[in-house]
Length: 188
Image (cartoon, rainbow, N blue to C red; front, top):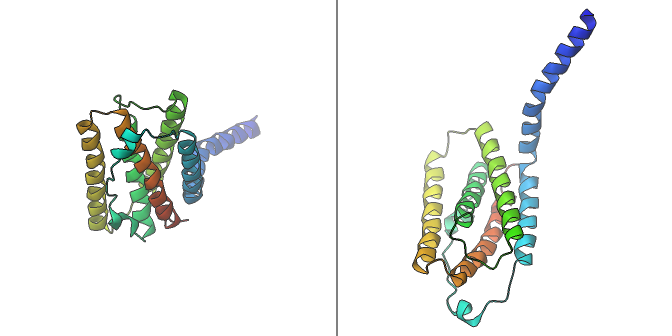
């Protein structure tokens, strides 16, 4: 009887420790997970492509992704930048004002993937709290906030038209090129 209690107690301890081990394991493979997410996202975006009407092509705009972000080489800052970019796009794409030709199922799948990856990175960043490079981290965050503010302002100015969303979708595609560069610089 006593032996069963010890076994049960040991099993309970194992169950309680398992989530911590799984989380740590996720963080060990964060870079690989991000690379896969990037690939899956680009495939999904490719599947949502449509032919742009001439009026939309005339009004395409560039949002000037902050090039200083792409110059980041420190793994911690690269991870933070990827998180900020994904978080920024999630905020824009989850807007109720989204008027797009994207199929609802594709949009929902993309948003779910984006949310899950953002949360995964956030959890790993919280586990590996760092206090150095605070100044660089703040500058990068500010650059990205300005970038996303330009996108939001553009959408508002264009009254969230279908063509304005096509510009944003094109920008999202371009941003994944930068995210891929930063992902290669993330810690293993």
